[in-house]
Image 1 (cartoon, rainbow over the protein chains, first blue to last red):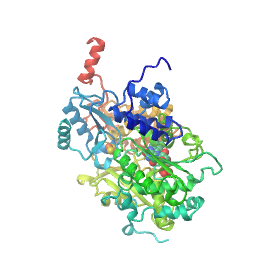
Image 2: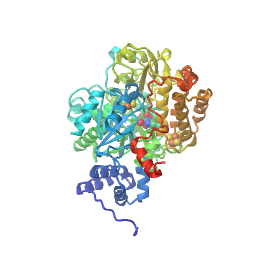
Image 3: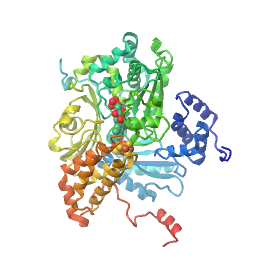
Length: 164
Length: 457
Ligand SMILES: Cc1cc2nc3c(=O)[nH]c(=O)nc-3n(C[C@H](O)[C@H](O)[C@H](O)COP(=O)(O)O)c2cc1C
Ligand code: SF4
Ligand code: FES
């Protein structure tokens, strides 16, 4: 499309190599969309409009289509998310073991509610569903890492460590 | 057939998971790994493999309990289309965390089982669809696959037999519905994870419109051990209608939550009291959801039951995903149900009206009872709605929401009626599901923006 805005972002060379490998794993380009979005998340820290454009261009899909797929899923880091994504599991097994105290403590300490980001851009708080770790409830996933068997002291220590 | 007594039961799926280095290829091969696959590929014909799995009576461990060999036999033989094997590693049924143990701690048994299965199905491409949150599991699986390629266990010439198999990890991105097999396949195709109407079943027309078998991680891991130890060994464990070792995930109010490998058919009370250390804090048992949050609840009196497909079906519930959620007598059942309903309302993909509207309304009605605004007719309305949601939708997520609702409302009816009776004045105790959004409850951040939009009026 001639009137499409130019894509500003570029994947790294290593990323492009990965995409080439990836395209060999599927019978069509569209199937590589989720992994390519992951790559964008990894390389740029989150997925913004420009990443959507880049993924679309890379896989010969329309940006609208990519946007539609992206917004179906909840686990991609999106534009505006803080450096640390605190994902508090709130499903029944965690609820039975006190995840609400964890949620409240985080809201209180960070001064934000679920779905919001602290002003310094450090933390985004999210309420999520079962993380598949109910035996170590309550659980908070911080970016990729699970923090399990949390209690208030443990949680406070975690926040201190993350604040650096 | 000699029945294996529980004390003689030997773990296989989790035998090595506590040992150092258990995820590596060297460790796996050092303990006889890939010998079964090599034997199968060299000595058996694909059809013989399918027959053996049929004979083992292995049933699916992902939720529906469908006979594995039978599903494989639905794949058409006279087709020039490629056939796909897809491993369901989405593991997102609340209360389930067993596949994670296999993938993080003993990934090669899953690769070996998938290899044997792919050979049986004449499939040369296998995808492992793993939920996005399982980063450690993804890394462990990817490393194991890389090792297997390097050692000639995957690729052009598997174990020197000339069989070709490519295996690819595919990460999901946070959507319960991508565990449902047709939703999973949509997602794997690079689409929104929307389930599709069956038929056609995936075995006939699945991934990229080609014949596809979808199996759970634990199911495929069982295949490894069936060929390692033999069909007779497998069938000697538990009831004949669905035998084998079983991973059960115990969570909630017990002293020792965890994944326990037990013989199929173990008594639920034995599992909870002996393996999982009993109800925590010396409290009394109130109820157990035996097969992930989609299963109907059992009251304390109903928990003297075997953990197998048939025994649980006889109690009008199911083994499901093997997620055993235990609740003690301090649990507020209205609150617990609200939490469950919130989950399904959040995860409904929205394609079918009975599911989209049904889950939403169940959550709303349960929420108003919980928050003191319940109406006397509400419990009956919830029961009626639950009934009408079943069997009317593209996938069974609607049923999965209706089952816990119907069973909790009818078995713990008094708690619902009490809350309604108490009305607004009732004491608002622990609310597991979190507050409903209420006017005036906007955070400062939200309020600021609202004021900005509406000029402070
Ligand atoms: C809403 C829903 C969610 C599901 N989630 C999972 C899941 O996370 N993992 C899984 O193995 N099966 C899940 N299933 C079951 C799959 O649809 C399918 O039956 C299963 O993967 C087949 O494998 P099996 O026969 O080896 O059990 C789910 C089903 C439904 C309806
Ligand atoms: S039953 Fe629910 S989750 Fe399943 S396809 Fe219909 S709307 Fe989607
Ligand atoms: S409910 Fe929190 S990890 Fe399963």
